[in-house]
Image 1 (tube, rainbow, N blue to C red):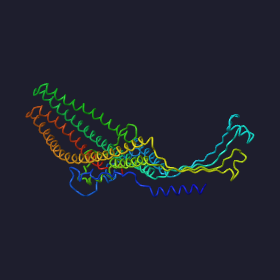
Image 2: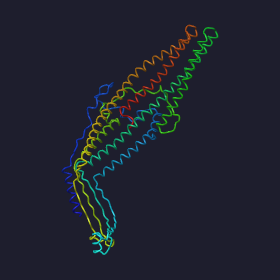
Image 3: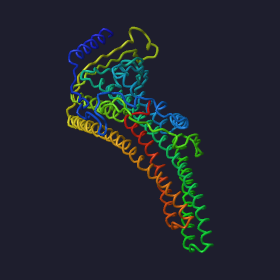
Image 4: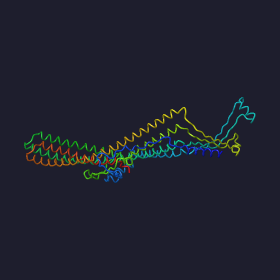
Length: 472
């Protein structure tokens, strides 16, 4: 029997070698999905990008690095993504065994009691003088499918693409978490700066209100002046608890990102002391496929779709299966292990072709083809989104810098206006409304300047993330 099995397996391998071919042609990643350059970026063939920088070197602020370290180690979404990678790895490992024959051991025992009036019962009684017959078997069975049309090979390719895709999903999640932590920290610094501005403005309002009261006592202004001054002071006072509320909420949001319960966050640096990175290198759009995890994931989804097309196409063709069974068999336990008399073996090999369910199998193939076409479109869309996000971040970096120049000049002018209006008001050369208006304008402009600085820092972070930075 061993020789028979060897001959059939050898014949099957020979057929596989001679016939094996790709029954479907893979679709490559579309090369025309990428533009030559990003909008708002200078034309360059340089492939270097800030995305190549590890996040620990991109973010130089100690507090941010500590927060991101905690988020990468403890964020629950990232931990879930890591478990998904482990699951995908198990599936890929399992797919490697597709070409290995299935071998099962078995031990069976049965007894049969035919009717005395049946043909079997009468013959059994005459031959053995018994009314029942026992049967005892022990052995091994083998089943193997030859991968003639590449079905098993495509199953391995699909599982491997799924494994790699799960890794890219985790990388994409980490880039977002790194960016969100830095955004949250910059927002926290902005709120700190705005709180300080509001407190300073409140003190300025106090000083102005006291001067107006003195002028009221001297009969130089009416009660309306006092009321408007106190109303503006209350406006500044109302702003303080609002900012304190937003600070607490932002700290809580950072706590969730870093996998901890709500608590205060350490700040050892001021918003204005952080330098804005200038002239960042962006590289060329086609490099996004290697740097940006979501684009890479879309590419892997296309590879998985190619594999699925190959699997469903192979189902349309005949499958070569070989089965074998051998062991010991006897109808008496005393002679069960009597060798070689109790030895038995069967070997079979055959081709099976779907007929009645051919339409269902072909429908599955058509669905797989449509899914692959959808994967191509999804890849193109992901590239569009990625390139658009890079372009958005580039224009923000450029235009926010220009806005900062004008807003700084505006704040400087208003600070001078406050100084002059106070002097003129004390000497009776200006109305109280001019002083109050100048103070209100200065408060608003200083708050806007703090927010603009935060937007600049966030724009740099968004550019870093959009280019695929943050997962290394």
